Length: 80
Image 1 (tube, rainbow, N blue to C red):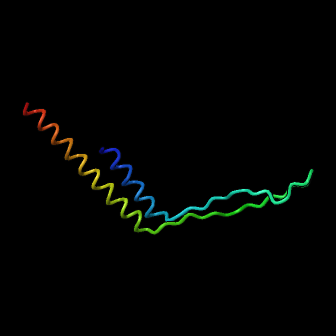
Image 2 (image 1 turned 135 degrees about the horizontal axis):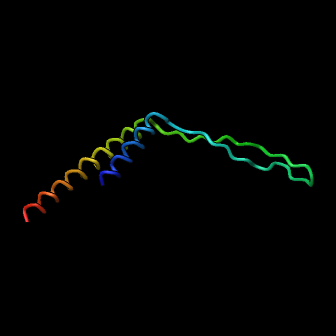
Image 3 (image 1 turned 45 degrees about the horizontal axis):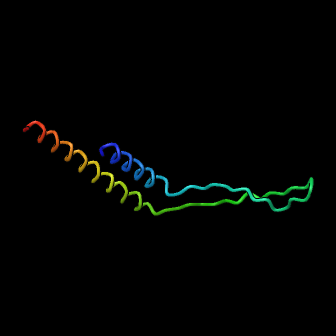
């Protein structure tokens, strides 16, 4: 649970710092024997910075709850 919290926290940090990315797809426009023409299409995916902040908050909660549950298990095991 602790590892998942750290991963979610880091992904949220990256989403806050980088608010999107661009990728290209190639599309055939003309395919006539030896003549081939292609077109590169630019596609962009964007998100708001507060989505990353929200994900960091969720990751922090998962991290804290994961540590607390592990501590409770160790305490219960030592009492038995």
